[in-house]
Amino acid sequence: MQNLPHQFRSSTLGWLLGTIAGWGTLLLAIAGPVGMVLAGGGILPIPAWAPLTLSVLALAIILWIWFENLAARYDLSEDRLTIRRGIFIKSIDDIELYRVKDVRLDFSLINQMAGIGTISIDSSDATTASQRLAMRHVAGAAALREQIRSLVEAARLKRRVREVDIGHDAI
Image 1 (cartoon, rainbow, N blue to C red):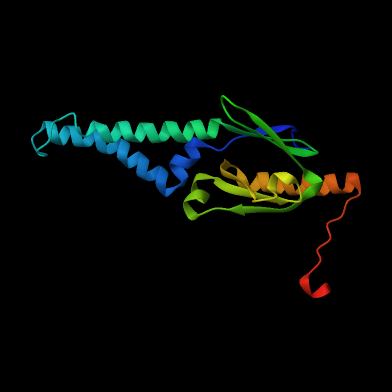
Image 2 (image 1 turned 135 degrees about the horizontal axis):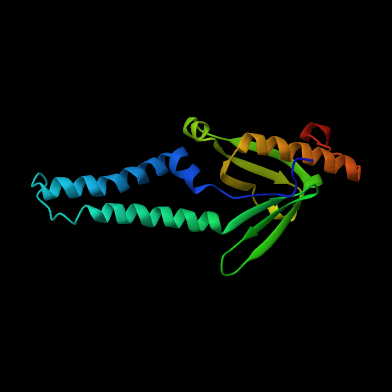
């Protein structure tokens, strides 16, 4: 189909440019050097090195998000979505695509401008029994959602499986 298997992760750059928290972190990073100049020029009554703690904090936040994103990788094939989690202790989980019930895409205005979104998957698989699988800050999320949806339909046709919804009124 479309260059399968396909691997993807949440995007740290997408998080920085596509979320309010990311923009706030960037402002913290910039505030450090600006504050250092203002403190060194005597405009701020603090030691010149003190504002750099803001930049160090921003760097720590970015590294935290980067490690979180590094710890989860998604592999999409014709039959399944494999979720690989962990850096030191790893886990691998599969969602069979024919079991997927719903593929949802959520994005804010800022997410749209950065080209990212959150793809949520609900299925009858044990992986999503307690809650939906949410893949946050995914680059090219709209196209990826459509790819997943077409792969779900192909997997259902291949296995001759149909999704049947039984409403409360039908019981």
